[in-house]
Image (cartoon, rainbow, N blue to C red):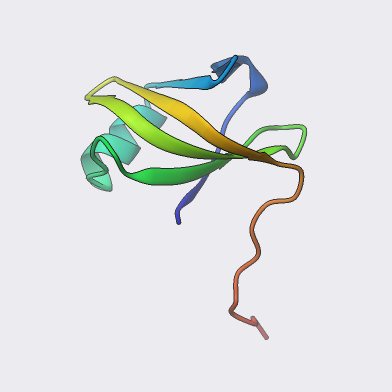
Length: 79
């Protein structure tokens, strides 16, 4: 699942709103669509599993599925 860094102001209740330029990157370059799941982390190191409910060129809206204190760890070991 992709991980993106956001500001906590983008979280409101059980929703998430992402604007340019990150929205262009997620929807355009990475081609995520409605129904895709992403993981976001805010500056307080709180992670959120998010399902995308609206993907537009300059705005993305997501529904928070789960809130985690620790971000997911990769199964890969980097040496």
